[in-house]
Amino acid sequence: MTQRQSPPEQELSHAGVVVDKAIEYMISQDLSEVAVASALLGGAMGLLTRALPDKVVIQILQNAIKSIEAGELRAPSDTGQSGQA
Image (cartoon, rainbow, N blue to C red):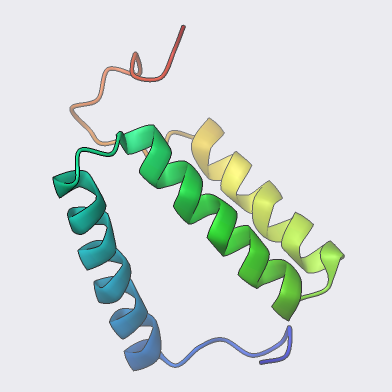
């Protein structure tokens, strides 16, 4: 896949279902949410850096940071305290 292509909607949906099942399995194995998320993020970063130029990966990460800062990824009932020290 080139940097200008997006995965077809059906392929993206299928991948999402597989990832959701993998998450369910890892949680059922008593792995912490942080361990699961970190492993998934590391794997995703590895795939992205193999498939896309660094500048595109950085742009994706910058967009993710903006979404986090805007509160777009937080559940409505989440008070914002989880994960804070």
